Image (tube, rainbow, N blue to C red; front, side, top):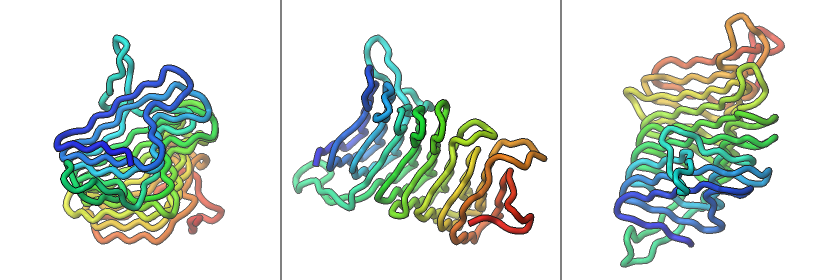
Length: 276
């Protein structure tokens, strides 16, 4: 594999000047850091390209793992904290491998799998192309010791998915999970479609929130955090409006801490039932 290994932090910054992907690596990429791993990126458009595209990658951060946006300053790419990684087809596309190894005698020698951080995971992604995906994950697990935040934005274009994961992608955190799909309020972009399990094992001060401005569909969701579990379709739509986003699919919901709440703007065919 292509190996990035450091006892401290790893920072990767990309800014595409033409129709291309900003930060991309082909097959078998391994990043291991004793500190934080930060990837900053902005794509330059083109319907086939994204901002961050790893297929596949194994990532292990001893601190926090962050994917954010970038800008060009005086001819150099620089990371912009609090911004979004913007691409046309994908903002962020992650495929994780089961395991990769750093040889004995090297920094961080050992075998690693999936994508995990001892601290927080924070991913902010935007897709601008029609039928794009702001955040997409096809295989592998994401886990964190601190809060896991994934935001998928649709600013322009039509048919853009906010957050998409397959059944082989599981999310787990000991510090809470916050998932947001953000499109135009009352519009038809930014939906959440997550087929893999979502689990928070934390307690005090943690919980799970999953919210989309359009439709929301999730599989099994498990929470033990005192802040409870909240799942929303049609976030931001004014009270009394009965069109727009809804909850289109629910797996098994297990909540042993705090309140569990479901909210949707557009009701189903019956006032007493949920789709899914």
